[in-house]
Image (cartoon, rainbow, N blue to C red; front, side):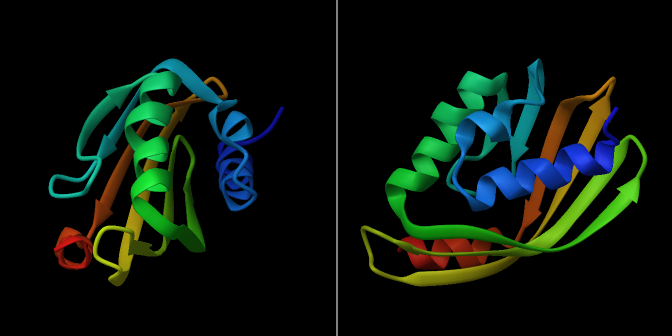
Length: 129
């Protein structure tokens, strides 16, 4: 059986190769995915399809080269934190951004139950205006 840390490592590896199916493979049907207030996809989205439609499709459509570069993972057992940097160029303005970010993951019984993002939304907003 994989550890919670391995599940999140595999999620990020799938993200790096833009494999949405693999990214969602361990997301529980009722998982709560929360994007920070002020972020383009702000709010809490429930379940894999809402996460895909309201987060990943939006970011992929509005941003050129949108990426998350993982720098470290903190293993807290049922809680895993990923620390890194977002970057990308907002298509409508042509402005680039880089913003530090922390992702906090909650897992139970081998499934991702919750995700919460903490980032500097002002840096993202500046690229969008």
